[in-house]
Length: 308
Image: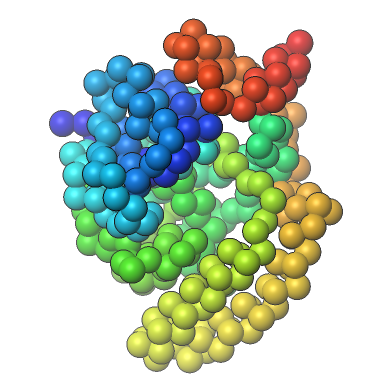
C-alpha cells in the first residue's frame, strides 16, 4: 500500500490540471497514489488525468456534480495511504513537499496535520507574494474566531484523523477547510513547516464569493462556539467578520490585490528563482508529453523569459 494518498478534486480544470498533476508525479518522494476526484467535468480534465499513463493515478469519476466536500470525503473513503495529502487542480507542488511533510509526521507522532508555507502566483505564473503563516499549533489556534492559517491544498495529515472528522456536507462554500479545523482543533495538533513548498494560485477576488464564504464561516463559528459555550470567541468572531469587510472591498481592487499577496512578507530572491526554474522545467516536460495544449501559454513564455 502507498504511504500517502493525494486527494486532487477537479471540475473543468483542463487549463491547469496537467501542470498540477505533473508537479505531484515528479515529487522526490514517490510512494503515493494520486486520486483524481472528478466532480462532473465536461471538459478534457478526465482525459488529461489518464494521458499521463502513471499507475499511481486513480481516476474516480461518476459524471455527477456533488461539490468539493463530498468529493474530498469520497477520496478519504477510497484512500489506501497511511497519510492523506491535499492538492488543488490549479496549484503547483515544489519537488520536496511530500518528503518534508512525511518526515515531520514520522518524527512527531503527536501531530495530526502538517501544512507548509506557500508562494502566491497569478495566472501568468508570476510570483506575487507569500501567504501569511503561523508555525506552531499554539500560534495557529490562538485566535479560532479569526480563522486558521493553514493553506488548504498544502495539508498532509494522518488518514485516521481525516476519517474521524471528514468534511461537512452540505458543504460551507469556500469555507470547507476552516469549518473542519474549527471542529477539530480542540482535540488535534497542527503544524506548518517553515519552508515554501507550494505554489498557490490566487487571481482577482470575486467579492460576492468572498462575502458568501465569510457568511458561511461565521454561521459555523456561531454554532460551534455557542455549542461549546465560548461566548467570548463568538463575540470576537462577529467583530472580526465585520472588520474584514473593508479589507475584502480593498482586496477586490488591483492595488488591494498587491497588498493582499504581500501580507506574508517579501519573496526571497532564491525562492523566486527556484519558482521560475520549476515552472520552466514542468512546462518543458509537459511539452515532451504532448500535454501542453490547453495550458496557459503565457506562463510558459514567462518561465522561459525568467530563465534567460
